Image 1 (tube, helix red, strand yellow):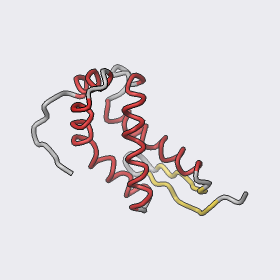
Image 2 (cartoon, rainbow, N blue to C red; image 1 turned 45 degrees about the horizontal axis):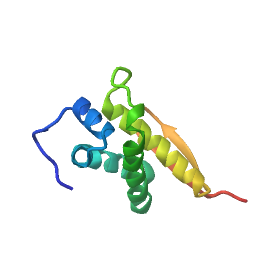
Image 3 (cartoon, rainbow, N blue to C red; image 1 turned 60 degrees about the vertical axis):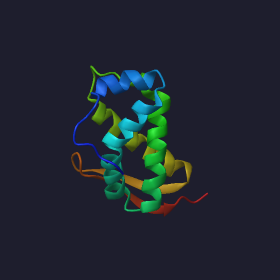
Length: 119
């Protein structure tokens, strides 16, 4: 994953460009935040397979729901982390995986996987 030490666009500029479905801006967003979200996913889920899948789904949700981001309410980074947490919860529930979400203060949160839910 490529990282840039100098950012070409602000979060607000990326937000506006992605709302217009600019794929280059979306790629830049992934370069800026992909490693951070993947690191959170690996820490929170303790599974490379789950982390890979959920990070991909998170960025698909960013593309699909960028219009819901409101810069005035929270930073883009915090919106993205919240979207990751919601995506992880939705994914685990859709796969009938029982889990407990443990939040001992950001960024120290985990999904304790208990196992498959009984049908």
